[in-house]
Image (cartoon, rainbow, N blue to C red; front, side, top):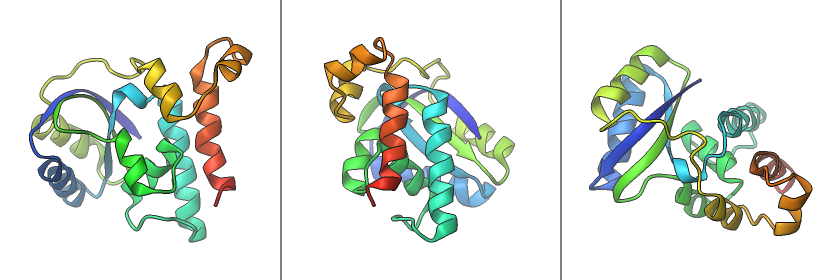
Length: 164
């Protein structure tokens, strides 16, 4: 798994998704772009990949597409429309792009050249308030973990398996 960080200007979300899909088809890699404001750590996305792959292996996946299944787990949601909030939106986006499987080297290079406008660190530069609201994290929970959101988000990602 490779994570690419940067910014991208999205005029048309459907065209952006189609471009990612083309790169995926060309390289055999699974590619998913995330709004960096919601990604708390590399481990957040690693865990989403692990759980999505396990669901696919067991035939318990919700989405037909592996990239969408990974998005569902990263979002801790079973509803694709709700999980899409973690994706890109029109305008300038600070993104973390996950590339996994297939020819990762070629896929990553192609994403850099055809998708990212600028390479800039975004991983770990999440919006705490936005993350707490999206994942329904309470102040009491934050107090228990001394303000560290990562274990709480990882818990939400893992709970998706139980909630089926």
